[in-house]
Amino acid sequence: MNTSRATWIRSSHSMQNGECVEIRHGTHHVGVRDSKRPTGPHTRVPTEAWTAFLHHLTRP
Figure: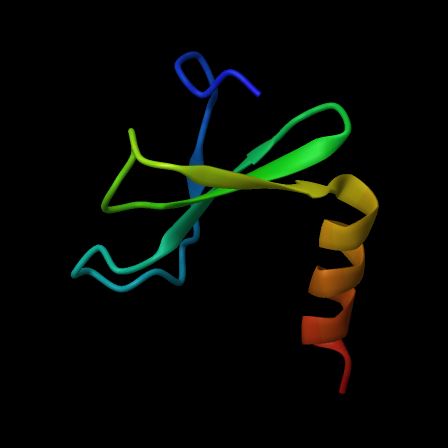
């Protein structure tokens, strides 16, 4: 995943102090990084796993 040209998205629920993560939707993966370290390391999660993670968060 090329992060130099990627569009990273910060949650609208992030705190004003900048302590949050950003995500980038790719073709087969979702990139996740620390917003305080945009040039630092990031991780890639398969799209299916990211979708399952979000579904789990929204379950009652």
